[in-house]
Structures are given as structure tokens and as C-alpha cells.
Image: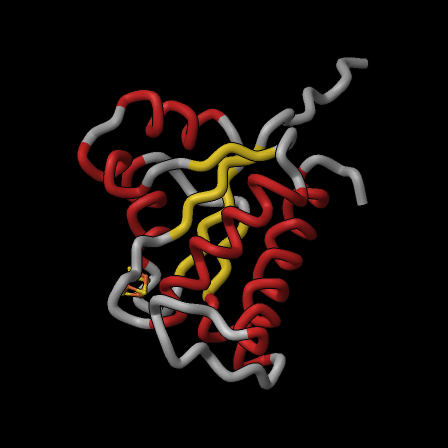
Length: 138
Ligand code: SF4
């Protein structure tokens, strides 16, 4: 029997929301996963380059599992990924996740307070859980 080939990397695709605070959380949380929590298991896909026609980005997202991380329910990253490369393995919407856990969104887009860090940690943990699920580590 053929052994199923397991993916070795997961692509994290955060939206580029600068206009709302939840949009900043997508990038802080994704960076935490990429730099600290799962540096060997994840790569990031640059959404603007992906949309602008970046060949490597589109190929990667076609051939490897991806997790999109959107600040709000407009789901810019999820929709772009679905259009350009295929369905993400998992899609996170930060505003929904914060609501589910009764965590207030940050008030500033520039600086995070200690309280805001809880929001970053929650989103980063959710991304990590999904990465582990994909790589069958959990
Ligand atoms: S998903 Fe929401 S926060 Fe992110 S880029 Fe789109 S509109 Fe902005």
C-alpha cells in the first residue's frame, strides 16, 4: 500500500489590513508563529505579491496547504487564495475569534498593550493548532 505523502510546510497568508486593528493582529500573530512557535514548519506568503502575480507564491499555495488569517469578515486573504490557488486548508477570521473568546480588539493599530497581546497569543495559538493538525503532530 502506498504511504500518503505528508506536507512538510504550511503557508500562512495574513491579510494586509492596515485600516482596522484586527488587521494588525493578523500580522503580529502570524509573525509569532513563523518566528517563535513553528519556525521550521511554516512559511509566509506575501498577499500583495500573491495578488500581483508572484509565480512562486501562487505555485506554493497550489501545492502546499495554507492557512489564511483575515482581520475581518471581508476575508481578503481567503478570497484571493481561493481565486488564485485553491481552497485554504483553514481560514481564520480574527474579529470572529476574538468575539468567541470575549476578547476586545486592540484600540490602536500602531502599539499593542499587554491586553492586546492576549489577542495576538489567541490567534497565534489557533494558527499553531491548525499547523499541527495539518502536519499531524497533534
Ligand atoms: S480582511 Fe478585513 S482587515 Fe483584512 S485586508 Fe480585508 S478588509 Fe482589511
